[in-house]
Structure formats: structure tokens, C-alpha cells
Amino acid sequence: MKLIAACIVSFLITLVTGRFLLPELRRLKAGQSIREDGPTWHAGKSGTPTMGGLMFIFGILVTILVFGWDAMRAGSFAHLYVFAFAAVFGLIGFLDDFQKVKLHRNLGLTAIQKFALQLAAAVVFLCLMRYEGMLTPNLYIPFANTYIILNWVVYMIFAAFVIVGTVNAVNITDGIDGLAGSVTVPVALFFAVVGSWWGYENDLGVFAAAMVGGLIGFLVYNFHPAKVFMGDTGSLFLGGAVAGLAFAYDMPLVLLLVGIVYICETLSDIIQVAYFKATHGKRIFKMAPLHHHFELCGWSEVKLVTIFTLVSAVFCMLALWGVIGRYHF
Image (tube, rainbow, N blue to C red):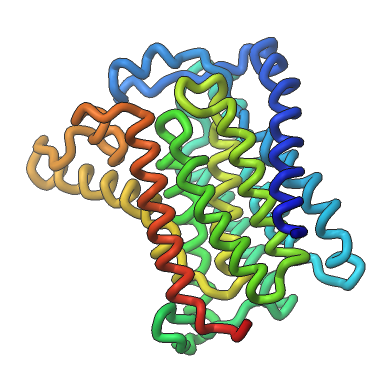
């Protein structure tokens, strides 16, 4: 019941926050500049307020402070660690969004600046998780219900790049109205269910449930036609939250399943660029990342979001099956 209540409260706080934040973003003229290399019809979205991710970040924060109070009194701060970690990525995204809004162009921080900041955040978080005893170098294998024991240095390098990769994969997925938020709802729900099963209901489960509610509240404003975009503020926060939860639960390989949409989006980008360079101008996809390819195939944004979300939900259910034997419940 606590997780359901946390979900509802986060939804309501996000919904109410949006009523105040949206007019303020419009007043500040915090409009998104649309990429020139995207589908031509996206040009009509130019000027739509961005940085809307602030509304669900605030909703999640208030919710975990209220519903995670018992855990904090008991000395467990896992939900706060994950939130702080995700918030650092959200701050990086905010700086990026602010530069875009200020300069009125679709380029913010340089790729090197983003990578350096994200890598530093990942390393600090992993060191904290290790210090708190929440992280082990035992790489859990879903379905097989076994572990591969790695050297700590190897594991930390692996983990840092998985985190940075996940964060940027979520960022790439945020390309059409409601997509990143919608496909992340089943992912957050997966972590909430696992938290309830494994006794993390008061901390990590609360965080995940608050994510579900916050994202649904945000989608009221972000679903097509979007009244606001989450911006890098929101997408980098979500990437940090998803990666942070996977490592806080000490099962990063589950990201291969729950993050299937993020992975496909990123791979489509990598394959397109590599093939374009290797063939001197030929393309595999009509446009990358993958959601743009399907748009050019005639899919509406609503159809695309619906199908991608269903794919995410199916793979999250598969992930539940894969980890169900880890703990008895």
C-alpha cells in the first residue's frame, strides 16, 4: 500500500507543479530549439517550453522524503543516494538546457564536457555504493541465478561506462512527444515491484514508485501534442535514476532487458553513423535514431509511443521472470 500511495502522491505533486511551472517557463521564454537534421514537421514544435523534467524531479523528491522517512529513521538512505545521483545528472542536463535557451540554438555543453561530468558523477556514486556495502563485484546473471566475480577495478570501469551509456541512451530516446517518459514507466514499475518483493519497500521501492507517479503526471503535459518537453534536465535525470536503481539493487545486467528500447535507439544511431562513414554516404535507416526511422515510415507519434512502451513493458516482465529466483519471498 505504501508504494501505491507514493505513486499517487508523486503523480498529484507533479501534476500541480506543472500547473505553476509551465506558465513560468513560457514567461522565461524557455523554448526548445528543434534539431535541423530531424524530420521537417518537427519544426512546428520549436518554441515549446523545455526543462519540464523539473516538475517530476520535484514530485519525486517530496514523495521520497515523506514516504522514505521510516527508512531514514532506521538508518537507510539508499533512496536519497539514488535521487542525489540522478539529480546530479539532471543538473548537468539543466546546464545544457540553459545554454540552449540562452543562446537559442540546439547545442549546449560540448560532448567532452558532458562525458567528463557524467563519468565523474558515476565514479563518485559507485564509490559511495561500495562504501555503504550496497555494491559488490559479483555480477548477477538473470535467469541463470548465478554470479560472475570480477576484480574490483574491472568492475568499477565496467560500471562507470554502463552508467554513462545508460544515461545517454535515455537522452537519445527523448526525441518525440511522450516517448522517453512512457517507455520509462514500465522500467520504474519493474524496480518498484522488485523493491516490494525483496524488502526495499521503504527506500528504493518508494523511489521507483515515485518515479512511476511522477512520470505519469508529467505525461499529462508531455503526451502528443506536447505542451512541454522534459529537456536534458529530465532525460539525464531519468537515465541516472534507471542506472542508479540497477546498481543499487546490485544487478546492472538487468538493464539489457528493461532498457531494451534505450539500447535499440542508441544502436540505431551508432549503426547509422558507422555505415554512413564506411559506405561514403549510404544509410541503413531512413533517419536515426530509430523513432525517426519509424516516423518516416508513416507511423504517428502516438502509435510509435504506444508500441515502444508495449515493447518496454514486455521486456520488463521478462526481466521480472529472470530475477525472480534471486531472493525468496
